[in-house]
Image 1: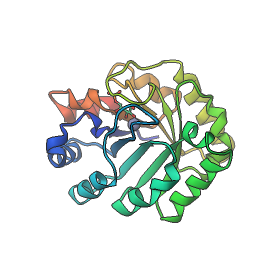
Image 2 (image 1 turned 60 degrees about the horizontal axis):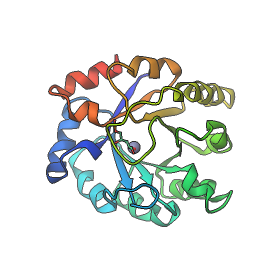
Image 3 (image 1 turned 30 degrees about the vertical axis):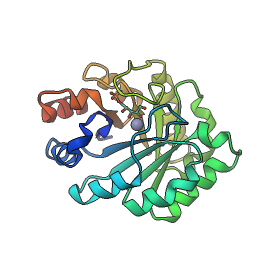
Image 4 (image 1 turned 90 degrees about the horizontal axis):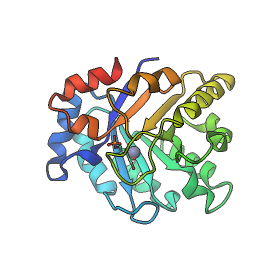
Amino acid sequence: MKTKIAPSILSADFSVMGEAVKKLEQSGADLVHCDVMDGTFVEPITFGGQMVKNIRPLTKLPLDVHLMIEHPKTQIKFFAEAGADIITVHYEACKKISDDYLRETLELIKSYGVKCGAVVNPDVPVENIFPVFPLCDMVLLMSVFPGYGGQKFISEVLEKVKKARAYAVQIGKPDLDIEIDGGVTEENAAAIRAAGANVLVAGSTVFKSSDMAKTIANLKK
Ligand code: DX5
Ligand code: ZN
Protein backbone atom coordinates (compact mmCIF):
# COMPACT_ATOMS: atom_id res chain seq x y z
CA MET A 1 0.00 0.00 0.00
CA LYS A 2 1.19 3.49 -0.78
CA THR A 3 2.22 5.42 2.33
CA LYS A 4 0.55 8.78 2.92
CA ILE A 5 2.06 11.49 5.10
CA ALA A 6 -0.24 13.71 7.14
CA PRO A 7 1.77 16.54 8.72
CA SER A 8 0.09 17.96 11.81
CA ILE A 9 -0.38 21.71 11.74
CA LEU A 10 -0.23 21.64 15.54
CA SER A 11 3.52 22.11 15.08
CA ALA A 12 3.14 25.02 12.64
CA ASP A 13 3.43 28.71 13.50
CA PHE A 14 -0.24 29.64 13.97
CA SER A 15 0.44 33.26 12.97
CA VAL A 16 1.28 32.16 9.41
CA MET A 17 -0.90 29.08 9.10
CA GLY A 18 -1.91 29.72 5.50
CA GLU A 19 1.72 29.79 4.38
CA ALA A 20 2.43 26.61 6.35
CA VAL A 21 -0.38 24.74 4.64
CA LYS A 22 0.74 25.83 1.16
CA LYS A 23 4.30 24.76 1.96
CA LEU A 24 3.08 21.32 3.05
CA GLU A 25 1.39 20.79 -0.28
CA GLN A 26 4.48 21.95 -2.20
CA SER A 27 6.61 19.59 -0.12
CA GLY A 28 4.67 16.45 -1.04
CA ALA A 29 2.33 15.99 1.93
CA ASP A 30 -0.71 13.81 1.23
CA LEU A 31 -3.14 15.14 3.85
CA VAL A 32 -3.22 18.03 6.31
CA HIS A 33 -3.75 16.72 9.84
CA CYS A 34 -5.73 19.21 11.94
CA ASP A 35 -5.54 18.59 15.71
CA VAL A 36 -8.62 19.97 17.42
CA MET A 37 -8.34 20.11 21.22
CA ASP A 38 -10.99 21.39 23.61
CA GLY A 39 -9.19 21.92 26.94
CA THR A 40 -11.28 19.14 28.52
CA PHE A 41 -10.72 15.86 26.70
CA VAL A 42 -7.10 17.03 26.57
CA GLU A 43 -5.57 19.96 28.45
CA PRO A 44 -4.75 22.40 25.64
CA ILE A 45 -7.15 24.26 23.36
CA THR A 46 -6.07 24.57 19.74
CA PHE A 47 -8.66 25.72 17.19
CA GLY A 48 -12.13 25.02 15.86
CA GLY A 49 -14.02 25.00 12.58
CA GLN A 50 -12.97 28.54 11.67
CA MET A 51 -9.38 27.40 11.12
CA VAL A 52 -10.51 24.54 8.90
CA LYS A 53 -12.73 26.93 6.94
CA ASN A 54 -9.88 29.41 6.43
CA ILE A 55 -7.29 26.89 5.26
CA ARG A 56 -9.75 25.00 3.04
CA PRO A 57 -9.32 27.27 -0.02
CA LEU A 58 -5.53 27.29 0.29
CA THR A 59 -4.88 23.65 -0.56
CA LYS A 60 -6.22 20.77 -2.61
CA LEU A 61 -5.00 18.28 0.00
CA PRO A 62 -7.64 16.48 2.06
CA LEU A 63 -8.14 17.97 5.52
CA ASP A 64 -7.86 15.22 8.14
CA VAL A 65 -9.58 16.56 11.26
CA HIS A 66 -8.67 14.75 14.49
CA LEU A 67 -11.19 15.70 17.16
CA MET A 68 -9.73 15.43 20.66
CA ILE A 69 -12.90 16.72 22.25
CA GLU A 70 -15.75 15.70 24.54
CA HIS A 71 -19.25 15.31 23.05
CA PRO A 72 -17.96 15.12 19.46
CA LYS A 73 -21.45 14.70 18.01
CA THR A 74 -22.26 18.33 18.86
CA GLN A 75 -19.35 19.62 16.74
CA ILE A 76 -19.56 17.52 13.57
CA LYS A 77 -21.75 20.05 11.76
CA PHE A 78 -19.18 22.82 12.15
CA PHE A 79 -16.24 20.81 10.85
CA ALA A 80 -18.20 19.20 8.03
CA GLU A 81 -19.51 22.57 6.85
CA ALA A 82 -16.01 24.08 7.19
CA GLY A 83 -14.75 21.62 4.57
CA ALA A 84 -13.21 18.70 6.43
CA ASP A 85 -12.60 15.67 4.19
CA ILE A 86 -12.26 13.20 7.03
CA ILE A 87 -13.20 13.53 10.69
CA THR A 88 -11.92 11.14 13.35
CA VAL A 89 -13.39 10.85 16.85
CA HIS A 90 -12.06 9.26 20.01
CA TYR A 91 -13.53 6.01 21.30
CA GLU A 92 -12.79 7.20 24.87
CA ALA A 93 -14.87 10.40 24.56
CA CYS A 94 -17.78 8.48 23.04
CA LYS A 95 -17.73 5.58 25.49
CA LYS A 96 -18.27 7.99 28.41
CA ILE A 97 -21.60 9.00 26.92
CA SER A 98 -23.04 5.68 25.77
CA ASP A 99 -22.19 2.41 24.05
CA ASP A 100 -23.85 3.61 20.84
CA TYR A 101 -22.40 7.11 20.74
CA LEU A 102 -19.33 6.25 18.62
CA ARG A 103 -21.40 4.51 15.96
CA GLU A 104 -23.95 7.34 15.96
CA THR A 105 -21.20 9.95 15.59
CA LEU A 106 -19.58 8.07 12.69
CA GLU A 107 -22.97 7.80 10.98
CA LEU A 108 -23.55 11.52 11.52
CA ILE A 109 -20.18 12.33 9.89
CA LYS A 110 -21.07 10.15 6.91
CA SER A 111 -24.46 11.85 6.57
CA TYR A 112 -22.56 15.03 5.59
CA GLY A 113 -20.71 13.12 2.86
CA VAL A 114 -17.50 13.31 4.90
CA LYS A 115 -15.23 10.31 5.54
CA CYS A 116 -15.11 9.08 9.13
CA GLY A 117 -12.74 7.33 11.47
CA ALA A 118 -12.45 6.03 15.03
CA VAL A 119 -9.42 6.70 17.27
CA VAL A 120 -8.05 4.80 20.26
CA ASN A 121 -5.53 5.98 22.81
CA PRO A 122 -2.31 3.99 23.38
CA ASP A 123 -3.73 2.18 26.44
CA VAL A 124 -7.01 1.13 24.83
CA PRO A 125 -7.24 -2.19 22.97
CA VAL A 126 -7.87 -1.80 19.26
CA GLU A 127 -10.43 -4.61 19.57
CA ASN A 128 -12.71 -2.06 21.25
CA ILE A 129 -13.27 -0.38 17.88
CA PHE A 130 -13.50 -3.57 15.80
CA PRO A 131 -17.33 -3.31 15.82
CA VAL A 132 -17.14 -0.01 13.90
CA PHE A 133 -14.43 -1.04 11.40
CA PRO A 134 -17.07 -1.73 8.73
CA LEU A 135 -18.26 1.90 9.04
CA CYS A 136 -14.82 3.52 9.10
CA ASP A 137 -12.86 4.97 6.18
CA MET A 138 -9.84 5.17 8.47
CA VAL A 139 -8.85 4.02 11.93
CA LEU A 140 -6.37 6.03 13.95
CA LEU A 141 -4.15 4.43 16.55
CA MET A 142 -2.51 6.95 18.88
CA SER A 143 1.16 6.27 19.49
CA VAL A 144 1.37 8.97 22.19
CA PHE A 145 -1.21 10.16 24.71
CA PRO A 146 -3.05 12.99 22.98
CA GLY A 147 -2.54 16.61 23.92
CA TYR A 148 0.94 17.61 22.86
CA GLY A 149 3.28 17.33 19.90
CA GLY A 150 6.87 16.27 20.29
CA GLN A 151 6.34 13.20 22.52
CA LYS A 152 8.17 9.88 22.27
CA PHE A 153 6.66 7.09 20.16
CA ILE A 154 5.12 4.26 22.23
CA SER A 155 6.35 1.20 20.34
CA GLU A 156 3.80 -1.19 21.89
CA VAL A 157 1.28 0.31 19.44
CA LEU A 158 2.94 -1.63 16.61
CA GLU A 159 1.25 -4.83 17.82
CA LYS A 160 -2.10 -3.03 17.67
CA VAL A 161 -1.37 -1.92 14.11
CA LYS A 162 -0.76 -5.55 13.11
CA LYS A 163 -4.04 -6.62 14.74
CA ALA A 164 -5.91 -3.79 13.05
CA ARG A 165 -4.55 -4.66 9.60
CA ALA A 166 -5.28 -8.35 10.09
CA TYR A 167 -8.85 -7.57 11.15
CA ALA A 168 -9.36 -5.19 8.21
CA VAL A 169 -8.26 -8.00 5.86
CA GLN A 170 -10.54 -10.45 7.67
CA ILE A 171 -13.62 -8.27 7.15
CA GLY A 172 -12.84 -7.69 3.48
CA LYS A 173 -11.40 -4.18 3.82
CA PRO A 174 -7.69 -4.87 3.16
CA ASP A 175 -7.12 -1.28 1.95
CA LEU A 176 -8.58 0.39 5.03
CA ASP A 177 -6.51 3.44 5.97
CA ILE A 178 -4.69 2.79 9.23
CA GLU A 179 -3.20 5.97 10.65
CA ILE A 180 -0.55 6.35 13.33
CA ASP A 181 -0.29 9.59 15.28
CA GLY A 182 2.46 10.71 17.62
CA GLY A 183 6.23 10.46 17.77
CA VAL A 184 6.71 9.44 14.13
CA THR A 185 10.30 10.04 12.96
CA GLU A 186 12.46 9.20 9.97
CA GLU A 187 13.98 6.47 12.15
CA ASN A 188 10.77 4.62 13.12
CA ALA A 189 8.65 5.19 9.99
CA ALA A 190 9.78 1.98 8.24
CA ALA A 191 8.81 -0.18 11.23
CA ILE A 192 5.43 1.53 11.45
CA ARG A 193 4.76 0.90 7.76
CA ALA A 194 5.93 -2.71 8.04
CA ALA A 195 3.41 -3.28 10.86
CA GLY A 196 0.63 -2.28 8.48
CA ALA A 197 -0.01 1.44 8.90
CA ASN A 198 -0.28 3.42 5.66
CA VAL A 199 -1.05 6.94 6.96
CA LEU A 200 1.64 8.55 9.12
CA VAL A 201 0.96 11.75 11.04
CA ALA A 202 4.10 13.75 11.71
CA GLY A 203 4.15 17.10 13.48
CA SER A 204 7.52 18.01 14.90
CA THR A 205 9.46 15.79 12.49
CA VAL A 206 8.10 17.72 9.51
CA PHE A 207 7.97 21.22 10.96
CA LYS A 208 11.40 21.08 12.61
CA SER A 209 12.98 19.86 9.39
CA SER A 210 15.19 22.23 7.41
CA ASP A 211 14.15 20.37 4.23
CA MET A 212 10.46 19.54 4.50
CA ALA A 213 10.23 17.87 1.09
CA LYS A 214 13.15 15.59 1.83
CA THR A 215 11.79 14.67 5.26
CA ILE A 216 8.35 13.84 3.84
CA ALA A 217 9.99 11.73 1.11
CA ASN A 218 12.10 9.91 3.71
CA LEU A 219 9.01 9.13 5.81
CA LYS A 220 7.49 7.41 2.76
CA LYS A 221 10.61 5.43 1.84
C1 DX5 B 1 -1.17 14.71 19.68
C2 DX5 B 1 -1.64 15.03 18.28
C3 DX5 B 1 -0.64 14.71 17.24
C4 DX5 B 1 0.63 15.49 17.36
C5 DX5 B 1 1.73 14.77 16.66
O1 DX5 B 1 -2.17 15.01 20.55
O2 DX5 B 1 -2.80 14.31 17.98
O3 DX5 B 1 -1.18 14.84 15.95
O4 DX5 B 1 0.54 16.77 16.83
O5 DX5 B 1 2.91 15.47 16.87
P1 DX5 B 1 4.31 14.77 16.81
O6 DX5 B 1 4.46 14.23 15.44
O7 DX5 B 1 5.25 15.89 17.10
O8 DX5 B 1 4.33 13.70 17.85
ZN1 ZN C 1 -3.54 14.17 15.80
